[in-house]
Every structure is written in C-alpha cells, then in structure tokens.
Length: 155
Image (cartoon, rainbow, N blue to C red; front, side, top):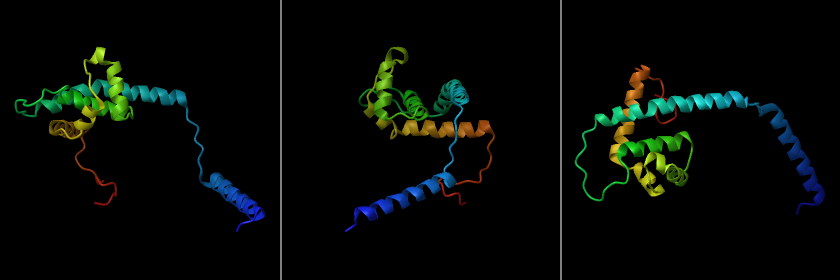
C-alpha cells in the first residue's frame, strides 16, 4: 500500500517531469486571429466561387438512367454540395441537416440527416466526387505525384 508521503513524492516527480516536457517539447504558438480570420474568409470565398461550376462540370459527363422507385428529396449535385460544405465547415450529419433546415427558405433543400448519411453510398454522388477530383487535378496541372493514398508515403 502507498503511503501519503510516497504519493506526494510521486506527485512532485510527476509534476517535475511534466514541466520539463512542456518546456522542451511544447511549442506555444500565438495565433494572429485577424490574419487567420482573413485567410479563412478568403478560402471560403474562393471555394464558394469554384465549387458549383466544378460540380456542374463533373455531373455533366455522367450518363444517368431514368429514375425509378421512390422520388428523391434532393438530386445528386445537391448531395455533393451538402457533403462538401459539411466537410468544409466540419459539421456532423445532424448539424448539417439542422443548418439546411435553417436555410431551406433560401436553398430549397429540406432534408434529414439520414439523407446526408445515405449520400455517401450513392453511386452517382461518388462518380461526381471522383470526376471533381480529376477536374481539379487537371486544372492545377498535376501530372505526377510522389505520395500514396494510404498515408504511408511509400511507393
């Protein structure tokens, strides 16, 4: 059994080690919030200008079969836009659905979080996102890379 004295000694040693670690390995970066906000606003503005034309172009090359079954609440282009905006603003599916409800008067999109979750498995949505990737690669002039898709960095 550990006595109070042993516990206090352990606590002091632990605090000392923690403090040494903080001094040597911790970088306290001070963020310039004004610059950060300006850069964030510029990125959002640029994405807003570029996102819809790229979605339209990516969708235009897909040959779609006539719809059957239950009518869809939102089309594939709207689903792609929702998924991209959800990722840009780092929202959960439920939060994105609630945000869409708030803006439904402007966007005309009224859907549930389940529709957003199901969008990930929609084959047309997947094709549009793939086509968007190819379009953006070509626009940026990227011909070859030296990275892998699995995150290991080995070829």
